[in-house]
Image (cartoon, rainbow over all chains, first blue to last red; front, side):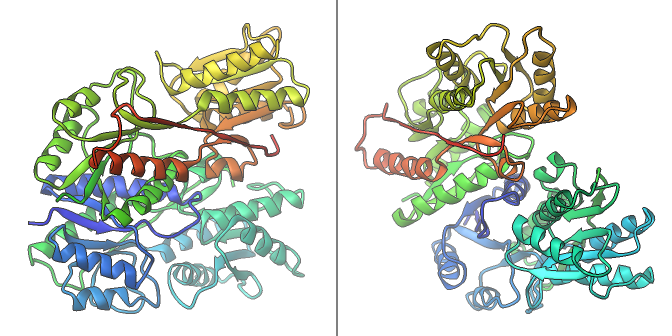
Length: 273
Length: 273
């Protein structure tokens, strides 16, 4: 009987988001332990190599299931794992394929809450900074911004910019672009804390005071956001980890439909900005 | 044949240091993969529960060895794992027991480099902020401060403060205490980035300009330090992870003395502060 659950730390710059992986892995590890299951960290290149590694561990009875933390819009791993019969749970919604167990956080609603808070503080031109992708996490958060803007009857034209990569410098660049518009925003709601920290930098460069002249809200409530006193939308990582473990165990017991999905609410953490 | 190597994410506040664990675990996972070994994350309370979990996994042939990331001054885990015959490698020096394989970074020398850099910039009263412990990482870094101060013939009396926990608020409090001395320091060398970020906060509260009026240097080069433009001493985490994997493999092959230790140099990252 396999006692491992395979997962792979998502690619990234090991930057400020990396602390979230530690938090999630620690909680997922704790949630699986009572069932006698332990996390097995897999090192492989994203995609085919990764799937081969999972399937190999599964056939050698070292892991009973796989947790994917980074579903993408073009993601053949789900189909391949399904074809190989490997039980799989996603952290993140299946942006393309739908027949899979997943747990995710409602980013759109979280961003909507951030927009509403900016409006409460008197902002009328509330911009959005995200990263460029066909569909996925940033597009979901952008939809949340647009939907909140429309329901508040606020302007959206010329107030949104997307760039790559998801980084502080991209955030700074995109915020500067919006500042140079004829009617610049007075608030930035951002798809990540990285972009928001960049926006903060742009605000400081213009001699403006964040929280007073300009509102800035990030997403992910990283420890860096806390240190920078940056308002941010927080994901309930412990609940997500517990739900991930529940779906893994239910899948092993054959007790859930394979398209079980659970969407958690995000929480706006109001700080100085 | 066991293909797992057990490790446990150290306890902590999931704060800015957590990103370092992600970085180290990712690198260790990659370094073990070519040998067909994978990391098994263990969830257990520090100490006896943890050792029981390792020994159980070892006896069930699920793991071949253990990596301990958080050796403490009072640490009975080493003796217990040795008694159970479980191959073990430490990230961190064995502060009490010596007969064990370990990999660590020379924190004292790294802090010494930070002190020397402050002196080069004209500072004569260079303080130290650390956390309170009998012996271990912070005491090692404090020794590095004291040794550098003495070799540069600078004053040390009344320029060092220790507190708990290791946090931003502790750093702020300790820096304020030193500022209130009759002859306050003009530079703060800190045992962690957390303490240094707190010192930065105290500097701002006094209306002083970090990097101009006051030097502040942290330790660990967290992503938050980079965002805050905080100078910091960086650990070579990839090299440490590779060396950890080498010692694990050598131990499994029976090829190294059990007291093999490897000490890596830290690097000072000079930023605005």
